[in-house]
Image (cartoon, rainbow, N blue to C red; front, top):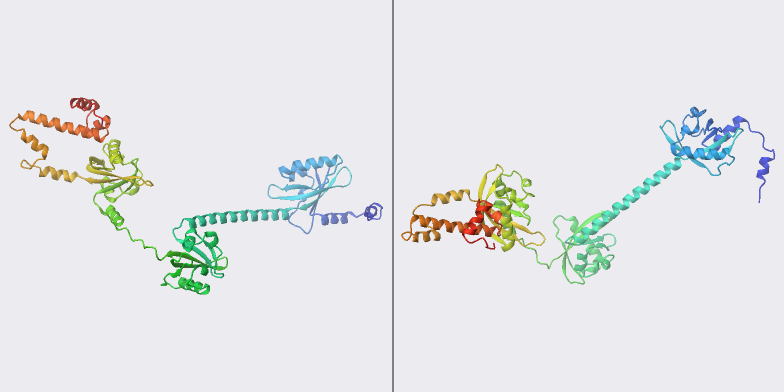
Length: 473
């Protein structure tokens, strides 16, 4: 059904519109109107008087429209304008982005209308800036919402990890409803329920000696008093005596009680006196103590070791290889680590430490392997024997009693010449030292030669001399 509107406009009933009235009608029907020639030149610019955001665009007249379009809009306009000149006016509106001296940009939706002669076109445009601003606000709101969701998921993950790994039984109770809002597995085990069954249950129903109102008041009073102790409760299912340590806070406009539950029947952990004494000894002893990993990297040292090597800070030592402070470097380190790994400990090993000034300090080292699967380590006790050597030399005199090897040498006096006694003694001591070096280095001939201060060739000669060449160290 038609209304006859088309015949009204085409029957000549409408009078001709005066030019001054036509322009006012055009600007009232659009935000911006452009009359563009067949060559693409702007013949006229009309701006809606109620919107002054466009400013004065009179300088557009007489210039090509493409000068005031962004790069992505030039092709769109030229394609639509070419179709219009070919007699096919665009049926859909065309969105173009204007720019003026790169100072500002704004989008406009245009419709094409035939206007006058010589293929001029009337472009009636609607300002899309309000829509673009609204869309931008929606995008920003969506981004903020997604960021909020992501932050909430992150906090929820952290909260779940904390609840699952703390060593305390924790229950969250709503003050308003008296129901359990959340609890970890330890709390569920103490109360004799599964975690999913515990959430939503009335907190007072889990205990046999308190009513709901009385329990809530007792917990709140405990949070208000500075000297109040825990609230003693008896679990209905497990029959355990529990101490509730409450803390109240407000979240989402409601008060929530966080109760830490501790079994009062459990034995109180006593402080480990041995560990305390060991820590005090580590700090106060005059002997250097070093903990290193199985690869020889220093894990921790005490102040005595820092004094021994002349290090100013703990960071100068921790993380470095202990071999850097040993006179024979990796050879000493290999002896200590191999013997500790083989037998679990090494009682006494004599070597020298190099301090920060390059001085060499004679020391005696004992090593112990610590059997800890999680954190394997080797502990060293290092004693400075530089003063002890001087005392030993001063105390040694002609009348002193010699050790067993000395007494064996004295037994030879009278039965052999002095030269023969000295030669035999030298060979015995030399053989003992070579055997010890080979044993400590686990038959590493190069390391043994360096430990004894011999060349590799000289060591082989002496091994052959004493019948130790084929000895399996």
